[in-house]
Length: 195
Image (cartoon, rainbow, N blue to C red; front, side, top):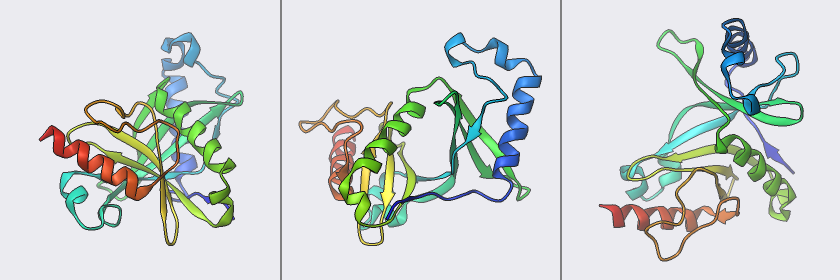
């Protein structure tokens, strides 16, 4: 059993490669902070993480994860054995896959790698397949997590830069595996306290 990944489309890798070529040819690589620069000849693209979004209405529904809104795919870029960047793809108005965002030198990129490593080492993950997804809650506060979707249960690992400890008597921790029900209850309590 394993963590299963999805793919945006057969064009995802080509779309990302074209984006990176434009990035390098446009001279943007030279303008990046030194710690964020990478060798353009040594970049690999991970499998995609489908992205899902929750808002207050979905959180209030009886099945928030079932009602989460799908919206694109997130890919990590690896260079020199390190996650250096991420690229988000979505389908444009013309029906074509396109880059909608990219982040350089942000905590979420490495946090995602850390969460995947923790998940891969966990015995629960070895017992059955889970699809790796990215979950965002962006209503009253910012929360992002690795969502491991199983056939009969869901696990959630909070990622940086989520605000996980403010305004609640029971803070949660980054990079810890939680039952989805525990995270959803925490999100609901936190959202209700900010109304």
